[in-house]
Length: 231
Image 1: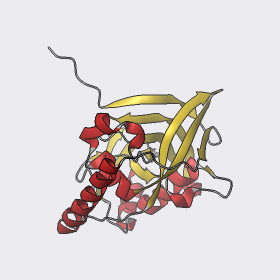
Image 2: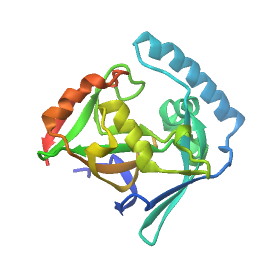
Image 3: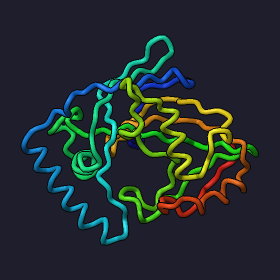
Image 4: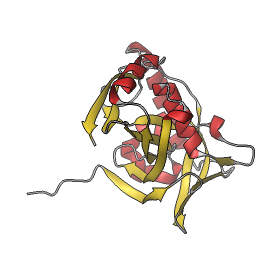
């Protein structure tokens, strides 16, 4: 019997509270090759045709990419750079099978931020992704998104907890005073698209039923349902 293959690798783990995840922007261009750039352009043109055809949203937003990370004295430090959704589409999404050929450092590698929501009455909550998202439509996933250029502060650092709060406000209408605790529990990357992702446990003051009512506030229609499990 063949042992199951892990779906993702754990790059860092711990209980990193606000102030203990340090992300600093380094103005280093993403290394690339002419061949890879041609692949990115081809993939983007394909996406621009395929996504609108099925009603999926597509926007070339500015994102923050993973360069390197380390854990020191109980803090998670991440060196980051700039990237775009176009680059993400042309590397991690459409050309993920070529990671060995191009090298992971040349991929877009935007840093995801996703939270398992823990309700006041003891439920773990996840979103059922709609057909309007460009990737993993119909799948159940944690709530969140990715670090974006808007999250970069004047000193070149990024508050990942503020970035997560922005995403949760957009997707669930959650206000900061409705969150009782948010803890980053680690950094992973899945073996399908190789995207790095910061994982959070986020406890809220609301019950499961109250959070179900929030789904209608998802203006972009990113989720069609909230799925839940007892904690």
